[in-house]
Image (cartoon, rainbow, N blue to C red):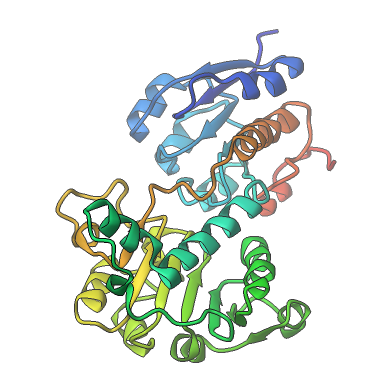
Length: 330
């Protein structure tokens, strides 16, 4: 009997050692490829039992073209690269890793917030130009007592909430799927999006990218914010309408931004955000630590290994598919 073949559709790692540690013991053959398009996946992964995916698109065309495919696991929390309804329709399990970088991303969001609040990047750049003068940072306001608005209140935002309170920030939360009791447990006030936008001094975006959340922060929302407020995004770039954000920054609707994610990554060289002193941009790095990367890769591979062993994945996205399958529950 041939080994089930598991393809990594695309990856940025030097080796696949962590994936091999998980998949070799269950008898899988792991094959790394580098695909950017659906056609490349179809060509290179035609006999796949499982796919491990980073950025390459896995739409209906791919899913219908791989007759042996039983599971797709994505490196990360979001699964916007995968056509979930099509996978469910075709009886294919989708897995992800929702809990691998909670500390890293919440730390990074706090770091971006602090960089905006204390203007550390601006002053660093000025000092390196030969300008030793704190007045380039005026105004800076005391952080304690200001309001932090959290858009979406899942694991990462809840971790950030605890850290932000240590700095004396008061918390507002907008999340239509979270009960008021959960907000209260974290000493946060559950409010409407409009109230959060109007009242917050800092807004940290943690919403996943869906049809509902794409461009949920656009011109209308930015104009509701205080002109002294900052917006932080460590979630998904397209949740913020980037053209609207540029306009809002240019026209002074808000004071600045701390961005780990953008609509297009990497940004074009002429992106106006790259020229703004009141914008701090990082290269989608909030998730990263050596420990988080190893955990991510092992858990992603484990989702595939579990299906090979006849189980539903521990981190199963499309649980509706269970009506079509007869796998066991862990």
